[in-house]
Length: 280
Figure 1 (cartoon, helix red, strand yellow):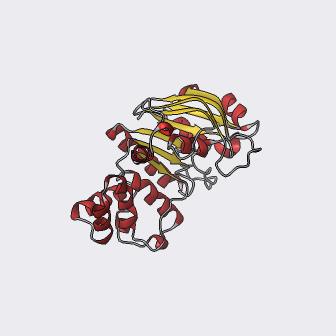
Figure 2: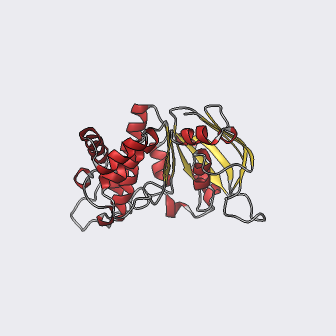
Figure 3: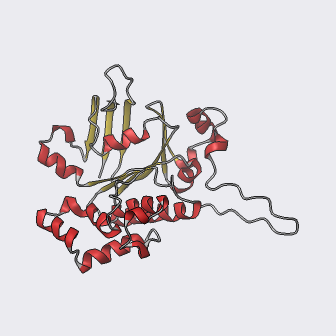
């Protein structure tokens, strides 16, 4: 799916009329099948931008176009159908705590199901549905959690279940907000690699917001920097310099954001220090 933002200005739906816009005069194009990372300080507008792309927040000024079409000019039923072709993975997945992981996963397929299919999947999933759910969990090292209750999962496991739902959704674009916030470095790397590989295989558009700057630089071909609701830069990853990041976050921010993983403790005398690996 292709996205285009044309002079987009947006206020949060719950904000007062006098509140400043969370996105201001944004112009951005995202090609179908492209993968890009959104970075910027907290409050920069990354989540709001994802919500605008997902047709959840209506622009105050300007337009959001999906495959050349303005979703806010559509009648309710076509708009709902369009939203069904988008998958939004929030930082805290909306998983009912007493639900089984299998049921929570199959909920991602609801946009492509009728009423009877939805009820049947909830009461008695088919073997094919269970196999698909198992395969989705496998990519996030959660295959043994298929019949576990959601409230018995750790925070990181719940976040990975939310990401695994994307693999079952009938979507043409994945909009993913802070997918690594509850994950250790190894799980973060595995989860991101699974998302990117599946998006490439399915030719889906993937837009991910991240606070881990070096992850964005190492793993995404294109990086968009937002500050105070404005586009500060839109560059290939190899062209994003330390000066760009200093301008984005303010001087002195590098220490807080540039590590993929915490620095290892110094090795005891006589023992070789571990070698850090970076995904390139």
